[in-house]
Length: 198
Image 1 (spheres, rainbow, N blue to C red):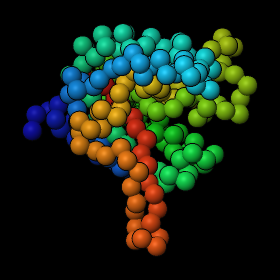
Image 2 (tube, rainbow, N blue to C red; image 1 turned 45 degrees about the vertical axis):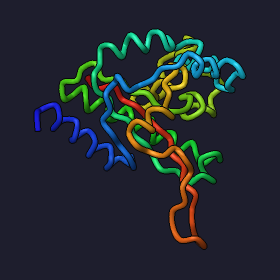
Image 3 (cartoon, rainbow, N blue to C red; image 1 turned 90 degrees about the vertical axis):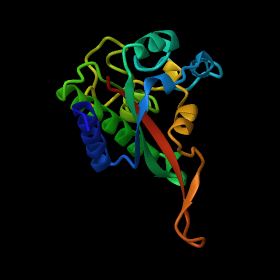
Image 4 (cartoon, helix red, strand yellow; image 1 turned 90 degrees about the horizontal axis):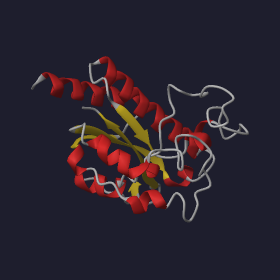
């Protein structure tokens, strides 16, 4: 295995220890970016639209992301298993926090390994996930620095990243699945993050 392959495997192992349940290395050529997906942040307008600098209309969007992908060849996509009944409850935010923390952890580790341009993205709005109890994003309001700079990462939606196609590419199912026996089965959904590596 080459040095880069060894480093990628280390990133994957560390992410698994942090709570990622599925991980895959994917060519950035397989990442589909759709203007229509990014536009769904605007119409119908997402409740988080305009609430932080990591969501539309303040992110650079699909066109810039396509150009960014030209500078990368490999990325890591990862998933976290979440009980479906929790995902859409107030408790679900803890899983989204973990999602962002794993994404940022992969990014930080990749940078330390020499992948100096690594960049992480995750599902969900950082305002909703980390600062829902705050009246406003400090960066957006120009009143201070981000409260969670080591964890919060930009939302994939605003860049038009087609996560559905990406998980098909790596052979994952995006469908809700049952874990356990029929009488005690728990429905499990996934949430996803992506880190551009090199």
